[in-house]
Structure formats: C-alpha cells, structure tokens
Length: 345
Image (cartoon, rainbow, N blue to C red; front, side, top):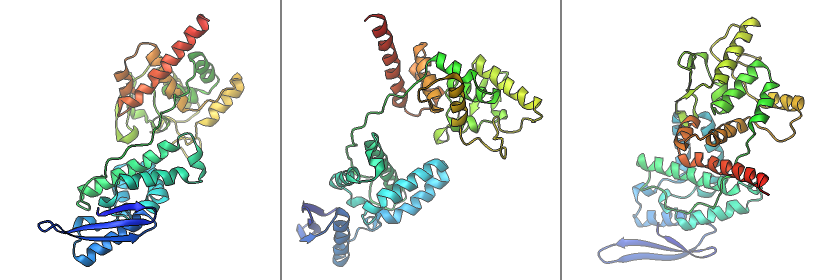
C-alpha cells in the first residue's frame, strides 16, 4: 500500500520507482474514501508499470470465489451468515480495495461507519460483536485468497471492538422438571436431551436412531457445529424418555424411521421447538422468558454446580474454544453469590 490519508478527502500517493536510487513518485490526490484512494493508486501504478501481480485483485473479485469455498466446506447456516455479512456490509465498503491496501486506518474507518449506520441491528446491545464478526469474515476471506495465491499476504492486524459476552439465562432444576413434566413423551425426550446432554436444537432435531447406542448408553452427535462429531453419555432420564418416546410411536402405529423426532408434517426434521415450551408454560404458570437454548445453558451451569470440570463440559457441549465454555463459570458463581446473599443478609 502506497497511499496515506492526509485529511478528510485528501490522500498522498507515494510509490517507490527505484530502490537503488530511491527514486519515488509522489502525488497528492482527492478521494472520498480509502477505497477510492486505493483505486487511484492502482491506476497510477498501472500507468507507471509498477503493478504487483498479487495486488491487482480486489476484495469484490474475491467474494464469489470465497463463498463457493464456504459452500463446499462449511454448513449452510455459515454460508448464509457470511453471504449476508459480505454483500450487506463488507463488499459495499471494501469491494474496490486490494487486500494489500487495507491498513489499520481503513479498518477503523469501517468500524466508525458501521457503528454510525442507522440500521436497527446496530442499536442492539451486541452491535460491537456484529462488526467484529464481519471483520473476522473479511480476515478469513483474505487468508483464503492468500493461500490461493490471489493476494500478497493476510489481513493487517487490528484491534477488535470491545465486547463482553452476556451471561446466559438459565432455569433452576425445579423449573425445568416442572416444564418438561407438562409435555408429551416426544417433547419430554427432546428437552431432556437438551438439558441432560447439552445438545443444540439442530443436533437434537437431526438425531437418528442409528446414532443412539442404548447398550453403551451414549449418543453420537454427528450434526455438531462446524462439522465436529462427539460422543455424549446418556443420563438415566434421557435413556428412559427416549425409550418411552419410541414405545409411544409404536403404540400410535408409527414405525420408528431414521429420525428420532420426525415432524408430524412430512416426516422431516422439526423446525420449531418454541410451541411446546409455550404450551408447557401456560399449563404450569411459569411466566419468565424461556427459550429452547436455555436448556443447554442450564446443562452447563448445573454440571458446573455439581462439580463437573470445565474441560469435560467443553467436550460435552462441543465447544471448539474453552473460552466459550468459561462463560458458565460466571453463571455458576453468580448463583452461588445469590445463595449466600439470601442466606446471610
């Protein structure tokens, strides 16, 4: 990169012509954005015959190729999320820039622009996290392009926006038992798996009978986040509710097929688990906000409260990074402080 912002709308172009004689080309130009300054620099380099072959491709030209790579190697959910980030925010700002031309100043300008956007999503508490995720996506795209020989190097170092992950909401054991007790055998099995085994919604709804070993008492989770597989032991409650669910299917004349929890319409994977929770809340009179994912949060917290070690809980949850699991230590500590506060006023 051979441009430098002097002030708003004004940039200095400084291109080395001959290292031995230190001959340079210098010119002050007007440009509305860093991207425009980068384009002007590349045009000047082309005229001077000083174009680096690895610096001619723009971020915009990389996008489609990178998304094709994501389509082949990552989940559909990840593809859709990255597609939204790239074409919604990354491409409009960085599209005309060469990867090598992106410097910390450019990244700061992007942060400033995104945080100033009047879009509703930027007024959520996690707006800093959204921008950080977009920059991570940009970094991954440039890293991939570098490996393909499309650009000279990885993205420059930058400082992420401050973001403190919120402590997740959890339910007490009594609340969960009360809630699940008001459900059908099928939904009891679903939510006991989420609570006693810590599975995600997608992992539960994609579960197949062939992945459950009743003799060994384990569940093979094949649809884990990021394509990772893991073995999760079944608690007695999970095993019992799964057997009850299977028996109820046979009693209703439904021969258990591949999926453990087929949808009533079409027999495919269940799409929404909020309705059975809402129905159970109405029956039990529970008023607080409850989501399916809170059962997974509760699994981690209750496991820690019972003396489980963090590494084992990380593996059971399928977390790639133990820092993701460590958030539950704060939940557990918060509950302990609350207990002491009630007991010793």
